Length: 358
Image 1 (cartoon, rainbow, N blue to C red):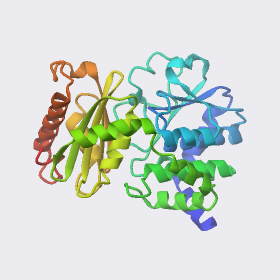
Image 2: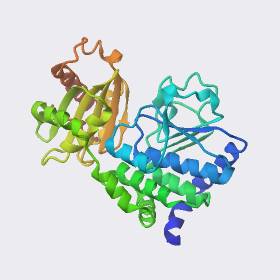
Image 3: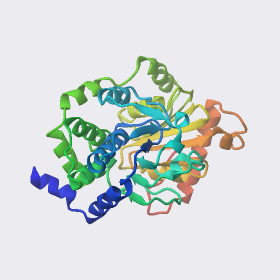
Image 4: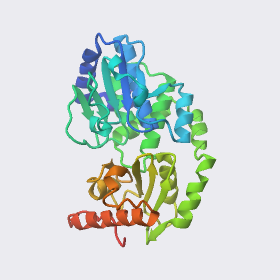
């Protein structure tokens, strides 16, 4: 096991960042760890890992965990309940009361204007998504080649020589497991190594229990609607669900459709409060969902992700003109098709086209 751990700690970058992190938090008393969107297991596990490092190396009693949206997915609620965590909401938190702000599984540009008027800017940014926009943080560690941020945090924990409790091993294992989709998505040796280490020490029975609680019964209506109203283009499927209660409804439907035989690329969209959310799923081979999301929809809102999974969020205000204020299923899906066609035309010959026959 020592040999396994050595693969994760022999990194000069991680050692320097751990040293910098310890220096930054010296004398701090009220740190906040922010997550963007509805917190998923990778973000939550990473936040738990960062809190453990701060508590064990700097004497900080506790950190405040904050997300921009409530926990939506059933499995994630079960996971957070099992971890006994209290995660507050950004719009109900007084950020002026914190003397240190860290972002995990996110970057400052993800938050839009939410962080613009706070006295303490984010000093720590830890993420594994591609760098987005222009921003600055005293400690910024962005590793887009990693399949999960939980892997990076495992490196931090081992480098800082922090004893990892079984509960945290369980969280990190679940974070890696979900964000790599059991290694069906892009991952590297470090992800596999961290998974193996966590697997040997985690409560796997707890994870099994959480995974069995997947789909709320109230989501059945979305599956039914998508089945009867989907558009099919050879090996691709698309559906606009209309207004949905959370982004997770789109995620659940997209995850289901990508498992259907002879479908390799899926777009499921829905209106969540004041945004159009588009969830993309693919096999990670024929298409690059993250690249498609950016090329097709990046000009309207935030977009990005990985080869097999991506998400787009567009303010409805930005779509009033392109859609002529008509948010019917036919009009929204036609808008998505046009965006995909334009992206395909802009794609270089050496790149796989974002969509075909659409």
